[in-house]
Image (cartoon, rainbow, N blue to C red; front, side, top):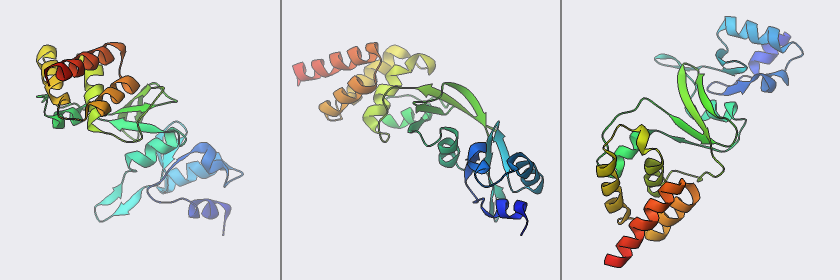
Length: 196
């Protein structure tokens, strides 16, 4: 078996790799990467980032976002959010957005990876998973970017916040909210207690 064949044998369909990951398997990594790109065994996603296409009944499928983001962020924690998720909170948001935001600890800025654009935003803290409480807080954090009627949306968010456990909303606001967002939820929850 040639060194190139040995290199290609280690590549796993549906996985994304950084150049440094591939260098562990080759003493001529750049030559083997170029040959694998020509053979269609690798696809270049961006500078120093590659994926192995997965063969399906419909042709070659691109790597999924999870594998792509894990490789790009070197396994560092992240949380992927689409502003479209706000539409499921029942607060009257209806705009559709062609944007994926990736909260993380390492990268900031817009990056095109594998033909898809991601907006990376550095945050000191991230929840382990998406929750409705986090999305409510995130919506208020980003309201000015959404193209919605701000006053009407905030009024509906205030009402929606009453449908969730107050302690969880308060915690999400304290952990992930901007200063104005924390103040908004503090007032909304205080008003609910006063009238409840």
